[in-house]
Length: 138
Image (cartoon, rainbow, N blue to C red; front, side, top):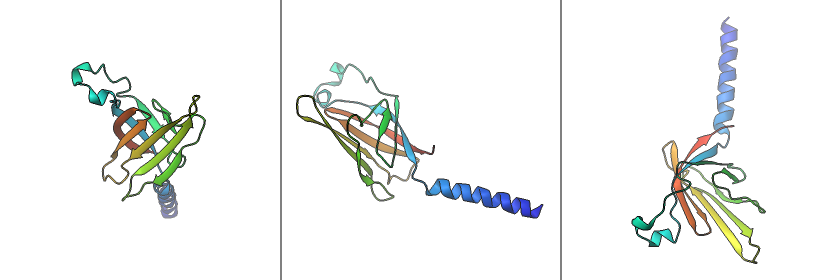
């Protein structure tokens, strides 16, 4: 019986070590979404936040966002910094416009924060979104 419990303990240790060593993805909740234009207006003119309370996910290895906010349409995102206990997780995506210009998407998640929730900022052309993200494992 002692060998059985030792085996069970080893399996639990192995599974938890693999999960801990993996790069956890993020699930994020939008808390504010002022656009660049709305930042210039008074609060009385602001019509409301359409995405507040909604969620999106971020794959840490690819930088792809899915859910209420997205950043991959025709081009793949570029993870320029995977984040660490000292640095933020950073993703940049550029998407061509039909008019010949380029749309730019930037996501920064404060991975270095010592709390379970990490603040984020996402810029989508002229829209600004902020909120919090948490790690999750699939």
